[in-house]
Image (cartoon, rainbow, N blue to C red):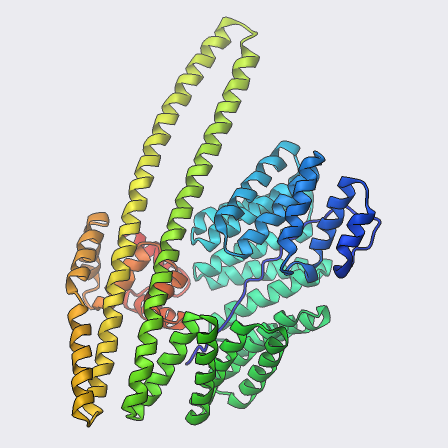
Length: 574
């Protein structure tokens, strides 16, 4: 089974009901409408209403409009407007992967909503915080915020918010590979969305359900839900959503060996992405064409599309596209014993792989750093709230009897002890972060050595098939240099460091499961470090289906039931 470059989006639409305005805001006339309005509050409401329209949420200057509304609200001391625009800005920063700014505005909106007792906006801010933690892979924290958001939405009877919260919880379970619970929450969210006939919410849950069935390799069922989402996107005029749905339908057809229909779907998706001038999705379509033709035994046609994808990737600087296209081409030419072409694409693959490694390593470390920063800020926020509450208690109870004052002194002493304990926990958390960062660095070096070894093996194969002595000599020299650059010491160092943090882990595993291979032990270590399938795939350069298959084989060796026991939870208890 080939994956091509499957794009599945948990489509996150941040839903807020805003104040009505008497003016109908058109996409191309917002500035003129704002000039006609005199009152600052009405200008803010007009911008918010404009940004609430799904057609306007992805405009290039949408964030600038949100900032403008926030500035006007601050100058006019319009508190409700400030709250709503901060929520919008936090959502936009999340979409652009600026997680630190997203969290900053989410926390600010949370504090303001708590002060104003605005339950709906508080639920939305908690939902945004949970979504950020979900993206960072901290599912314990994300689920905590999602359930708090659900409770608030149920309290005020806000059905759209309830549907959204249920879908978010389903995302957490899917990330943890618990397909059954994920489907339960997605279906509950869909039921409410259908009840209130919210097309955006309905479409979002159709896509989420399709994601689960695709992951379970039930492509016909997945395509049924994708076509329902596609119908809504057509009615809404969302061409990007249409293209994504059609490409994912084609992916299911490709994996079901329905090559003719898969090609039709990829062409329809390509036409839409070309109309939108979406270069990344166009390049992904080219690669999917290449995989489809190659699997259909029309390799020459597949080569044409792999080269188109490579060209588009190189022109736009898409390293993952370049790596995938070059890898496919090098494998094809190696099978054909075309040494010259295979060699050239191996070099392109190596260069793109090095760049991917650097970016992935930095991304992982940045996630760890951001996660630590968020935890530290949350600790400071809780401490500040505790201090505030203590001061209020002192002011109130200082007016009554000395007995109450003595009680306050005792309470203050208890708070001080708690502060010392929290400080100790914070120091231990910092040490744990350092251990995790070191582990990620070591794993990255090991993977790079493995990649160099793989490329060296390819060069050895090329050398055996090459007849020209000069070329064989050059290839042999490069192969020796690559082999010499690998360093088994890194694996030993990682194992030693891992054992320091998780003493006896390997020994306990091998004692109970002596048939585990080195690669399976390494996968166990990744999972023991609580790395998600997405992070493992980014770190190793493997496709998500390859990681999933490895996890499936590991579960069988560990004799774990498919749904009763979570693999990460099982390994964390060893």
